[in-house]
Length: 139
Image (cartoon, rainbow, N blue to C red; front, side):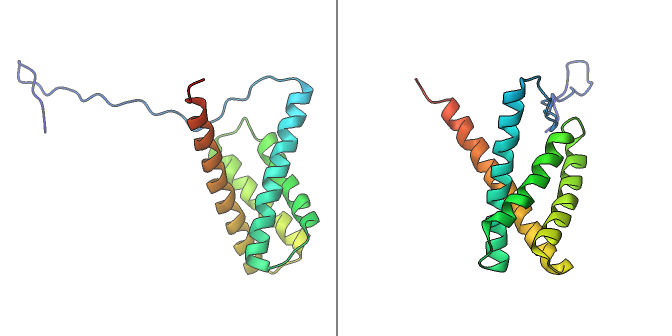
């Protein structure tokens, strides 16, 4: 429904600004950076292991630890780039790591990579929303 100003001109609609999807890197001490990297390696390793078990069946967890290093390193190194670059390069590197570590065919590697990406995104959203809810809890 259009609204009109008294002089007959159409009023401009106010559009809420959207937040950019890019994360701004913060300065930190060496233990903070190492701790963040270790937590991200563990997170990516856990999601890689669950994705590999879902697609391949019973697999050793040590392989997932090797795969988890790659997306953690990629996202850490590329933090200053736009999210689309980070996501694209991380998925490609994840594909190559999964293919190398598990020694799979291209189609099977694509299935494991897709499952890993999906599981990582869903788990990240659940954790982010849970932290947002807990941050608003009364003290």
